[in-house]
Amino acid sequence: MTGSWSRLLRSTPFRLALTFGFLFMLAFVLSGAIVYQMMSADLAEQLDDTIKETYAVIAATYADSDPKELVETVDSHSMRSPKKEQLFSLTDAAGNRLAGNFTAAGLPDGFSNFGAEMPGLPKGTEYRAYSGAVGGDTLTIAISLSETEELETIMLMSFGWATLIITGLAVAGGALLASRVQLRLDGIAATMVDVSHGRLDTRIPLTGTGDDIDLVSSQVNAALDRLSGLVDGMKQVSANIAHDLKTPLNRLQMILEGAADKAAGDQDVSDDLADARAEGHQI
Image (tube, rainbow, N blue to C red; front, side, top):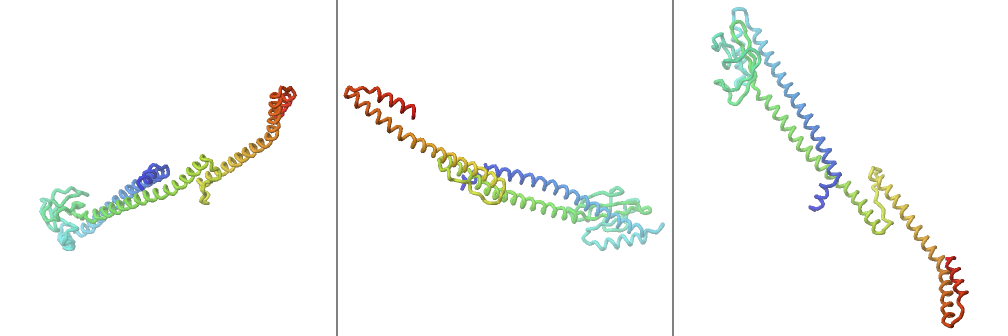
């Protein structure tokens, strides 16, 4: 079993399958990274739009020189977020809180991120905030990034599991395809071994799929048919030559034996030698 696996790992089909699997995985990872970046950017943009819209709605409640309705609106929104997923802060020029569920201290105007180091905020929570001046006061709206981070985590985990599954399928599929191709190549090799040992009637088995391996196998089988025909023809020629030489060789032997008998009796054998020479030329 170990030897077959080792041979499979060294086989060209398996290496080609792994190469294509690696290229597919590389393309999948690159496309996944691009999709992840695009989705993260889209989530961040949507979050900024939500914060900016909430800020605009609350800031619109401010009346000239009368921040009372603005204060009430900020407190009303704060009460809707007891777990502080959303933060609202209205501070005066001195930084004192006028309304809201936290005090925005030291945050710049516009968008910014801050952690939960401020008193009264959940530990380990990051926020995305927008600050701007409303009258003489500063209004800050912040939304927790936990939901966005959770979505990104789900995306990463899903992408990771998909990568593992696809990798496993690529390796398993490559091994399966490579083993099937290797069996067919082993059939070709076994046929060549039989032919080299003189079994010229052996042929490569065909699957009937008409693929490139079947095409090559058919061409090799045709070449073996021609080779077998040539060998049979040579055998027939050799048999014919042996049959044609049998009679003149027998005559030559008889002439030489007769000459030998005459020589033993001191008779003239010149005629026999002349006949033997003529028979040799005939042969």
